[in-house]
Amino acid sequence: MKAKIATVFESDPKIEKKCNEFFDMVGQSALVCLRGVQSYIEKDLPALDEYAEQARIFEERADEFRRDAESYLYSETLIPESRGDVLALLENADNIIDQIRKMMLAFSIEQPEIPAIFHADFLELTAKCVESVDEVILATRMFFTNPSKVKEVLSIVYALEKEADKQAEALKRKVYRSDELALSNRIHLRYFTTNIDLIADRAEDLADRLGIYVIKRMY
Image 1 (spheres, rainbow, N blue to C red):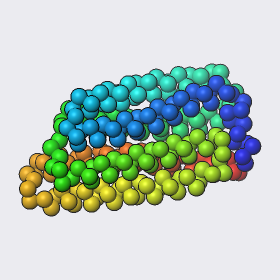
Image 2 (image 1 turned 45 degrees about the vertical axis):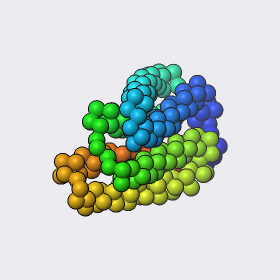
Image 3 (image 1 turned 135 degrees about the vertical axis):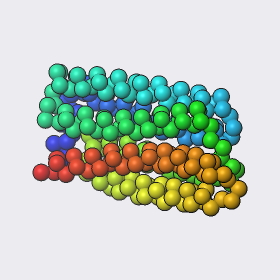
């Protein structure tokens, strides 16, 4: 199995380079996300806006790359038997960047009021989601270089996603049980909690796709 999967990139080093650059963008977007939320919690709005702009740029670059990759894979690639799999992986990874951009833009525009009592919860949830992204990108790279280890890393992604869901649920309960918050404020914080948690969900979607392709290449 390992030799079969390795030939995907060995036959076309150009697409290998392109994909690695794309995966780098996903990882950088996740880091921007964490720093952006940290900046907002610290009330550093100029820094938040800067990170939101970086997220927007990453999304634009990712969309452009995905379109170029699609054209290249279907016109010049030497890996016709794998191009559909590669494109689907890129699309799912692109969805992660899209969710990060949407969440960062929402923070920049809506500027929710987050009481100090919830600061640690929001930071911990964001960090958990970012960790899930880092792990699924590692698994994606392994799909092309060390496929026998992919399932092991995917199990970590799934565990992180479940932890993120639990943290998000706990935070929502905490928010709605706060007597000091108006209902509108509770709804606003629930919205942002959900949108942060969606980052881990997008990582899980990519993990699901990877799991299917690993099985396909085993037989």
